[in-house]
Image (cartoon, rainbow, N blue to C red; front, side):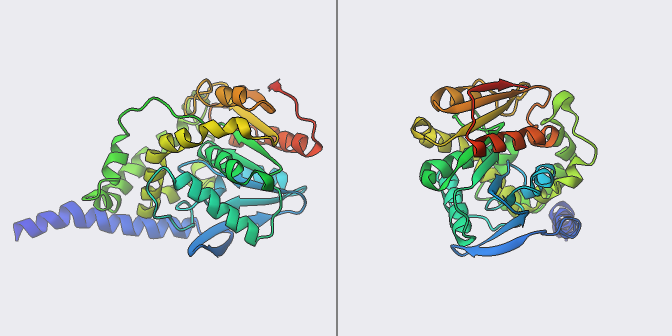
Length: 316
């Protein structure tokens, strides 16, 4: 009897708290867009505005609400499609847990855009979403007008030991148990710190977590997708890095001078050196969050690609 009580206290209470928290989070942050079934997966996306199409691909861990400021700026002149990447926000996860995850996500987004009858959009990708935009362009270059890569990940880094929560969540024996119990508690404790790490002086704007529906990431299934995306990204970039110099579409690379999440020397600067026709835009005082702190600069770069007046380098 004492063992049963101990197990209930150790597992049952955190499990119940997690289920309660998931319901509360989804009630506070319901889906705001539309759904389509793509290759038997439910994809969630939002469409606003009219004009040339701009597709927004968010970072990890995040969802399409990450672009709330940029969407508001673009909606008067563009058709803006923001997509919850597979497994994030309200899109279903994919089963693949290999480095092919990035390619498969790009293929699903391609099928979604074809279903929406979208032709040659400009794709804006932030961080992991930038890596995804590159994968999309490598596979489907003829269907893309241009890329705007913001604080992007692009190249593999030196291999090291994965973050402890990733190692726990990906464990086939106790990973799901942790995701459905203690991960919610750990995530809520560290959510502010995680957000702050993206900004200058480690300080996120007021209401940033609320405005971007960041708590959606704490749900068990989303945490699992986030984990497999993160654990497989390095190898995914290894697979695609040799194709960057073959791209011929306009590519704008926007780097935050203080970015420590995707260090510029490894990612943005190296990518700019490999894509001959790319333009590098260095932005001061934004760290990893150009989309939050300087969304108007992204709009400017979209307009430049549409007007076909792209230069080589620009400093803000």
